[in-house]
Length: 464
Image (cartoon, rainbow, N blue to C red; front, top):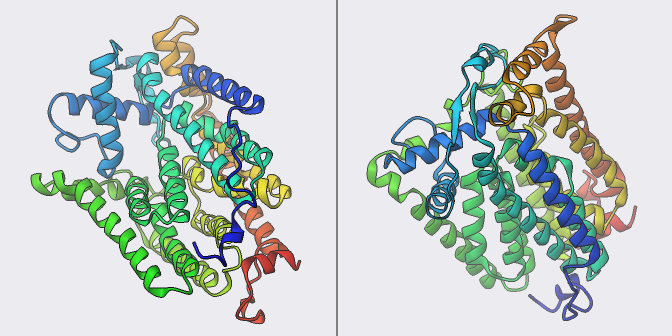
């Protein structure tokens, strides 16, 4: 880092702060307790049962794509494979899951992703617990980012708490058992490594993140712009750094896909593009059509515009300005209505901005989290199928009856649809509200050309 840019870090970076304060320890205890209780009670069987199928396929020697059931690129599959190995070696889970005959009616509800397959409570917690640990690591990475940007341990602790006790973060790992927290971990590690000039490692992690879920790929132009700004006085170092990151990403790509290239299943790695598409009448409208193509073209254009704006106007505080630009970029990514788990990629940058710059951004945070959490629980009583099948707390017939009740119509719409549409609308209103807060005189102005060439993102923020 150049002397010019060194002012962006905390004034006393050599000072050491204890991470395990009373606030942090209390948050960890409460957060883990909430995750284990909620994870034991509620399970989204549609996805979690697929993880059991994938792990069973791996155990039978068929690999990730030998049998139907795995629809993602290999990264998450490798994590499941490692989990299967650990489980077989050290754990005795017993029954992994079953197909519940009494719940076959769930699969007649064609507008929703509800399955009669369910996993045991023990299997579910075995899959979810590593995600709880990743949530904890993500919180620590947010803590590190805030501490590096501000040198304020109190703010760093607040950042950890805001992430680790966030209802949406808890719901995604404890109920859905989705792996977006892994994407967050990889992206935050890539950002931290780039801040410390470890570009080869940053390229590796960013590639891993993009191959786990697509969205981090839209952050690449901005991170390239960051390297160019950081080494503006030494273009040779900037280009070498970008080359190192590209090399890391290339090596990672070859390593990830090499087994599939050898066995001729490379195209299966991208089957999620079509295999998980919904019907025209589904809420999520996941058809691969013109609307999706146009949306992602728009997101790409927006990401490039933000990267160019950062390249032209950042420089006084490149790391702090990068976090602001990452928040803008993540907001643009999710203008196309996302499902709740995807929003985990937005929350770290919003969290950092809240605790370092503007507490009023807690308002859009609260709206987004409320809507997305409601959306995550929209499968209502069907989330209790695992509990009913593997405990004596309630009967399967009760779960089936309650789930059926939510299929009943009120004013021409299923009660379940009110949960989906209500949660989805609130969530999207929160995203629009966040964009309005960003545009409405706090972070950015569209008329960048009115500012001199040496203006910075910080100047744009501080002169309002």
